[in-house]
Image (cartoon, rainbow, N blue to C red; front, side, top):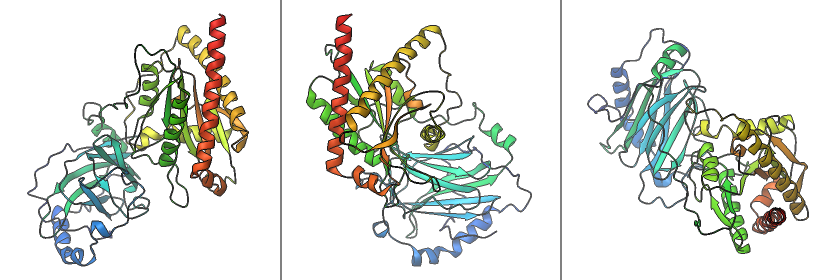
Amino acid sequence: MSFVWVGHLSSAQSLPFRIRVGGVIGRKSMAGGRISLAFFILFGALIVGVSAIVGVSAAERPGSAGSITAATNDLPVASDVRLAGDDSQTRMVVDFSQRVEIRAFALADPYRVVIDMPQVAFKFRPKTGEARRGIVKAFRFGLVMAGGSRMVIDLARPARIDKAFVLDAANDQPARLVLDLTAVDRDTFMRLIAPEARAPETARYDPPPGNRSASDPRPLLVLDPGHGGIDNGTKAATGELEKSIVLDFCLLLRDQIEKIGKYRVVMTRTDDTFVALRDRVALARSRQASLFISVHADALRRGEGQAQGATVYTLSERASDARAARLAEAENQADVIAGLDLSAEPKDVAGILIDLARRETKTFSVQFAQGLIGAMKTSVRLHQSPLKSASFVVLKAPDVPSVLVELGFVTTKSDLQSLISTDWRERTAQAMAHAIDAFFSTRLATQSQN
């Protein structure tokens, strides 16, 4: 078993546990060779001097793509993370500027460990979390709700959380989160994460207030900037993140729509916060929205060739092509990326009334999508097949016309230049606002005739 240095851990035995532990992770049972706590203590003592030599202050470390965009001066800072171990046992150590309370639990399918904590500023080195070591396949981090941050650790196999605790700062060493994982078989893992043993999920999302009023008869539109918080979405080779690109665009689009004066607008998020897919849909339904627009930026996987231009998607259980199916599958993984457990989610309600509502909603969705493409084609580059369909979770409200707009490809240089261009964003937002106005003008005129 080989190790990288993990820092000073000599006070681990005397530290009280403040969190619920006992989740699992890994596929292979440990066949002997268990590393004792005493070994880790001795190993930690050996590297105290090394950490003082090679340690880098939080101020000197470059920021990460997962860093919180809001002011972070008063937040605890997560400055470094290290992994040690092999496929049987793996340890993760995270340095903090001050002690934080944590809660750790495991989830299955895929195997992962979730660590919840108060909001912190992640200032890890670039590409932190992308390399595998031992049981840890990869990990990500970020804001998961207002006031709360999360680390989600993808596991290469099922494993048990042996220890998960935080050490106070001492002897010129920072506060440290320590997570010890031991490989187990799937049956053991599933038994440990049974519903009665599973840690509670993240608090429900509280949507941002909208300019809604019971006496305001104007149609309500919901704009949904994709991803956010711990879920970065796609990433350009030059570092731009989808979650930031689409949020900036939606804020501009909101302003363009409100200038018309005939519509109310609510956004599923107005900052770098994670919002579960079901909560995005629930917001639109609870506000009795007249239109839901989810905004994203696409990316091609390596080997898929080149593509450019905007695409508008509507809901269909059968995707219009293989690429649309893969995109929907990727976008629908947002809740898994954020470490949410959806095993207890209720199935869609079936029935004649729901089916009828869906048919009418689908008709309106397609009508709006077609009008949107028509309005955008004069000022925005469109994909060669700009109207597609697939089974996106965020489009499944049975009573709210919904579309998902992929503004372009962050993996295509010309598209990326457009996506970060102020002039392009303004032109595109104006075209979309015009399409929205035309859609409702037609609908209202038709309703008045009836």
